Image 1 (tube, rainbow, N blue to C red):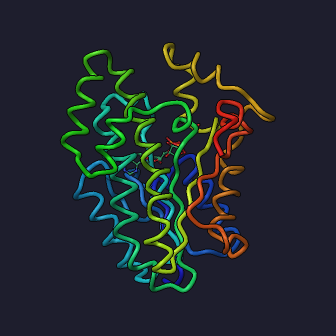
Image 2: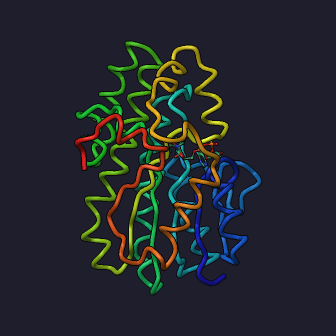
Length: 260
Ligand code: NAD
């Protein structure tokens, strides 16, 4: 297969919407998911699953055009440690592994999916552990949060991973740029998928989601967010590199208007 776009978490939500958007304009898509409807079935919560995802995708296309590291678990997932595995290592390990193959494609680029959660939270110690590849220290930090509650630990794990993902993109702009591969980040706000449905029906979490300020539109379909990811993958954004774009109807600007 030529010039494929590899998408993790392709079986539902944003990954599924993006697969449709790209297929409809003639792109070759390779979907990776733990769900059986994907081209490659791999569980990104394990090192073996992440390795399988990379080798299987490269077997199908050795010189991919793009990678979208999208798969993520919700903050209310029952195992906060799995959130670290999927939402951080499932992004970082895959992007690290795909850099060289992407560099062999003249138009190689990648997009990592963060979240509005990056603008509202995160634990500095945990974020530092993730970015410094001290995963066992990260698990110890999370253990402390777990003593408060599973929900608290899930929120801390989720928002910290999403900060780390955005910082990974900024910190790697030099390395990736030198290899000729564009790397950007999209951070969705309230996006109408099963993940948002789950959060809105959770008694402890829903009030925080409802309290997010709205700049212009309260929520959007996954295909609206997919359009922005597709822009980052297109030649129209060939001068955009190392950026984090909140696609959130303005929530992030209202929360922290002085951050630029
Ligand atoms: P979703 O739950 O609807 O879909 C996630 C997909 O990822 C599913 O197909 C699932 O099977 C897959 N996945 C989960 N764990 C996996 C694993 N271990 N291995 C392989 N695949 C796995 O989620 P979504 O709302 O489409 O979210 C997509 C991305 O957007 C996530 O990174 C999420 O954190 C982020 N996000 C979502 C929202 C929102 O409101 N929905 C807001 C901000 C950020």
